[in-house]
Image (cartoon, rainbow, N blue to C red; front, top):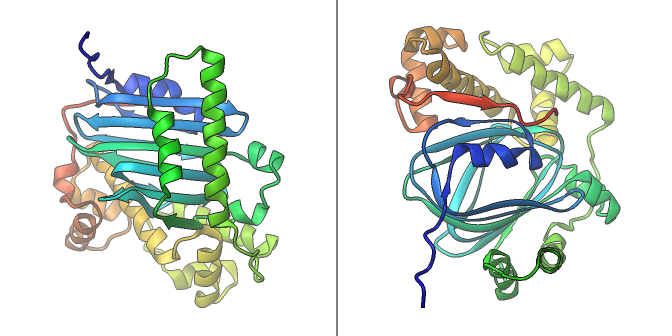
Length: 322
């Protein structure tokens, strides 16, 4: 019996080539292979994208893209992934299999990191508005930003995910149809987990526009010592009103969003611009480099000086237009 083939190496260019299927403005460091194993992205139907992955990471990988509106189902059979979506922390997996559904009500920045030796075996299904509308999935299920549900997947759901990860020698058409049928069966079991009644206090269109203005104001003023009270006054709201509506629309407290945006911006300045720690602290609105260093270490687990330029050269790959 011939030996099993060596798992293939996955390079940054492989990831960049397929990134347009799931988002735009993809960024990741250049260099040698980042993982070994199986990593697949495929469009099963318009608005229905499969991501099947069974890999072991060979070196640190930090990647970002802008994730479009829609729902994502993740079934993690082994290992765990963690990411930031618009500054909110998401994660799925652990010692036992875990399933998760989460909503992205508008295009949002997605950032994920993986460590050397980390192994993840999972199947993700990404559902865009085209598929969701065609299948008449109630809009309130996928328009509540960052709404999520987690559960222990059934044996049937795990077996469907395993079947989608198993190598298959069937002709392309038969393989595609079988994969699509498995995906639809997974969604038939998973989507009812998200079938909650439409909330009675939906945020009005006017307030959604106000909260989008608040978000844009924060992102444009990262170097200013902007307070929640000052932002509320600019928008003609009370501080409590701003906090309540911002969380309802964006799925994250405004204070945490402001802090995370500043720290993410600081990280980019340290890694890409090579600026000094004190210079970056003032550039993102901190009055004290010491306070900045404490917040940075708490958020990323390393000191700001440890995030300064590495040997690798980071490249940006344009992967579509939002």
